[in-house]
View (tube, rainbow, N blue to C red):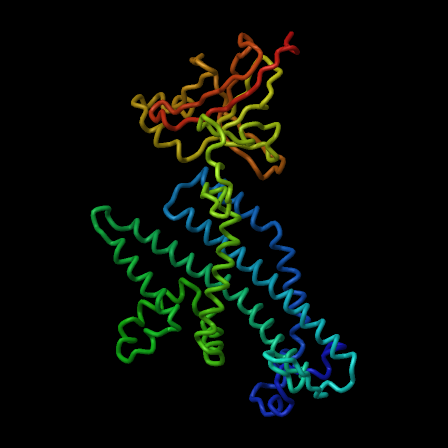
Length: 416
């Protein structure tokens, strides 16, 4: 055992520890697991630093090349699992660090079981004795619960995401005129209720035979066979209402953490932003972002972009990234020989429409070689325009409401 833990056990007394049915090797692991816990938590937290960015970038690239039902749900669930791990291990490290500090405090005095009363003035309750070892044991159990909770929540979210993905994929096997969605949704909710209610449906005599085949299949898909033993053991030793309150609070905190991380990418409103006129900043509703300009975009990649917001050259280098969402507009072109990505756009600067432009198939690389956008590039002659502010407009011909406005400032002093 560690330097400070030789006289402190996880059990409340040595008598209970000796009478326990647990094998000796398990008792040894229980008393020494805190060292492994700190190593695991530290390693996981370090690994999670960049995982959120990798997940976001993966789903951004996936949304360009694939379009399947539930993509955003899977993204949100994956981020929730990531943030759950981060939050859980962060809390565990805090608790375990505090636990170590209390163990270190206990090493300062030889008699750990010394009883001294502390008298508080009314209405505070007086403490008859200060029992530091008992408090350390309680905190130790809470720390152990947190590291168990962190891994369990990740497995639960991964399992339920897998089940949702399988059910969503299975829906495609049925004809569109067959309404099976309500049935699949009902089965999913029914199975979820059984999990939330601590396997209540499995405990009903005779009814358990009816749900057994369905639950066995769902158990395999949702990875319930991995984490159910731990949940059952926990429920047999801790009051269920305490478990429910803990997980409700933890999921709410993890959900808020996740929401703050993904609301920008999914363009959700920021409910924590209390600025009154944040949606009334300009008279025009036109919106643009730094990703329109490759000179200020950290990744150098954007769906639609030009070289800079201040143009000192006689041409605009326009890049339009290709996404699977554009394919429906390409399919609307009547002439099959003209079904090209470039033919769905109407491009103009101010009121000047550009026609018969030459386009090039392009792969645009970001600062990270793994970050790429495949699309088209064209060059727009702006040498005839005056110095000052202008606006590049890119519209989809068959969907005029689908458009992008890119403002830029033209500075012609460097033109030859």
